[in-house]
Amino acid sequence: MFAFNKILVPLDGSELAELALRPALKVAQAGQAEVILLRSMIPVYMAMPVVAGEYEWAWPEYAKEQVRTETKEYLEAVRERYAATNLQLRTLAVEGDAASMILDVAAEEDVDLIVMSTHGWSGANKLLLGSVTERILHQANCPVFVVRSADTISRVLLTLDGSPLAETAVVTGLALAQALDARTTLLSINEPITVSNRLGLQQKWQSSQEGQQMQQRSRVEKEQYLRYMAARFEDEVENEIAFEVIEGSPVEKILEFVDLHGIDLIVMSTHGRTGLRRWLYGSVTAKVMRSTKSSMLIIRPLPTA
Image (cartoon, rainbow, N blue to C red):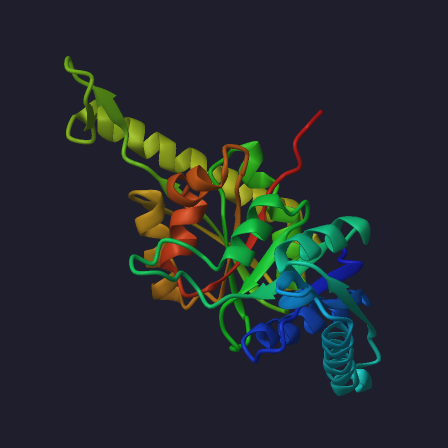
């Protein structure tokens, strides 16, 4: 089973950001991973006089030193708080905007997992994540664990549609569930079969006998596939892997299943290759993230050469 060797936890000094610490440290304990506690120092520019009557924007050295000191003291206090866990905790204070620094450090340190909290979707129409989280989800070359609650994670949902893309999330998702000592359910949605009419419009086809037979064959195939996937990994995890196929549209049924079964963590993959706007508005993964209150593990496969 895949092991997490290095975990990055971005912090900003808030209690919200620190929600990521508990699950991150639990995952680290399971595999004796190193945890990097990161906080970026954002420059505070002031209008500084250069010649009589003229000013320019600069970050004064005295202000810079104050920010550096406060940042390092904060990170050290967090590290000392968890020193008794005997984990490898390393602090890192860097200068620059948060998203860029998180991405740079994750790449430079060859991080296996980023664990960060988020306030959820915001704005008048609740269409966007926080800007930092948006960039991390879109650009990180490692899985991103978005924590949305302080509750213990005990039930994990891993969605599969039979595609190689979706399967890229299985090993990492099961490894995370194992580290969190959580039960996992593999879920596949048997979507309604549609055909195009003379006008090119999509219509559901279950009303005909042939359509019903095709729908049933599709369900059987998905059940066989999930049974195979569960059996394939059953010897590598301690908790039993359950599986289920349900009828309907993917986003609606995933969210319904999450609410009905008290799912704490949803594991999904996303290609992330078509630009942030399309990712946010077009994919099943993005629509689920926009609507759920559960934590999520997002895996974006690396592009192939």
